[in-house]
Length: 313
Image (cartoon, rainbow, N blue to C red):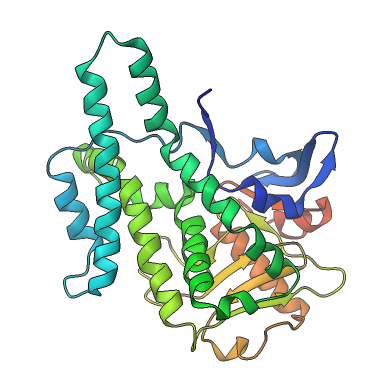
């Protein structure tokens, strides 16, 4: 059966803010513009029908992707990886062309259509499964896995995939284009761009891990970290206009109500791994998450959402 309800925030991630209710897992949610938090199942948030469905490219789309996402004098290995993304997507586009060649083959058309709908959904599911142990370590305050190069590369990519896979990122990127033709081309190319941008930024995180290390911080008693439908954010971009270019990055990723990841070279976070933040800093990070959210913010309790809910408009 084809998976049509596709999540752009992993349910396995939101599980940390949820509690079991029968067979379901529920968390507290607040929609932008509302003052009333509500409880809901994790399966009902950050989800859209056929969100990851692939559409056929046109001849100039790949050339445009390279012009947008490839640096002219970029790292050769990085460009090789990104060419690999293009090769993978061209295989799936060829499937769509194959489907069109056999209009009377009902079973073949159904199977190819399922592949086009589920390709990225299944890909993200596999990625989430591979990150379970790393997330559990971070939720326990342990960052030791990041000292292993292989695990550091894999988790850096996982992290940035969570950043770019969301509805918020798709809409923000789309809004940069004005004409119907440019928007249509972006929609066709975004599945490739999403992976290429994740690869590029993950490479930066890995390459700069000595000066901007991955650290885990904790919330003090009585306070919790919230999260949202944009769970990985750049705090430097949280409080400015979405059209303002931001050159630097400080990655923030809450992994549970009590623990959060910071990747930053800022002096304020130097040597802070494993330490408890003061209440001012927790409020600041929650406000940054609220500002960066697309449509919903999430917490494990109603009270935590009421603290920031008045400004979530």
